[in-house]
Length: 415
Image (cartoon, rainbow, N blue to C red; front, side, top):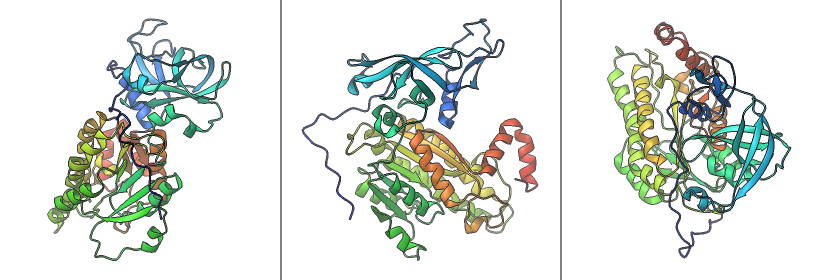
């Protein structure tokens, strides 16, 4: 039986969902995009090649305005460190003391960074470009060998570690549901709520689900307002990570006999289902972004597992692609809603999975275990954008290079 988490002490002051300073230039969001994907990039001058920090409006070396975010060496040396005991900003004041350091980057510039508790001056460091709770790109410096990040509460403020948290997975019938449950339990999740649509149908591997520590099934049908609202009333105040795996893959182009029916069902589950979840679970998660402590941490993340066809339409699955494109659009609105509470929304774009409905899709397909690993890795690193599978990565790279070529290839059935 799962041990009961300690209840919140009603005599302790309730923290408000404060956020770090969020003002930055539009150009600085080039770094935000890199941090969201887990890449280490720095501002770089296109004219002289010099790196800079922070994002300048013009190169400090040659005054060129050709500044981009480019991949850079992530090594650095710690020059000095300090503990901010009484920071001026309310967010950091609530979390004081906060350790910061001045580092000399291998790429050239010096920078003030969030600092792991272990390094001392003259130590070698590894820099990471991360998103803070306000969604802005910041530099974090940890030991060069990686070290144990779980001991650093500053790192934990910027990631979505499942340890000690209660997680809702919306669809037990998804190919990644069981591997996700295993991965989350291994990562230390306190409790896992597994949504089961149409619970009258037999569920394969039910015994394997039952063997996962802390897992229990809950009735959840995303095509039903009542089902979603009933579950929110029952566990909405407990969920700290929500992973939406609901899907409804059905092949068929626009002229297929059941095209309209399949498209309607895909929309109900994938797009409108997400909207139903967002309407009742979204405000609760956003309102609990500052809850808890080390023993009972608060709400931290929402994960949407979507098809890469949300970005590039495969004509032979027209309704399915439209539903995922709509869900991706809804995700952007939901991210804005959750951001006020410091809760991160992570979008996982996956290639066709080892699902029975994708039997005719060419290999390599994404296994449930690989998809679950990508989701948990993204949570542990605090990412916003995750791509699962070589096919999805290749498709998105080609889409960025030449979208018309991708459109023509997909129209001919080429992935």
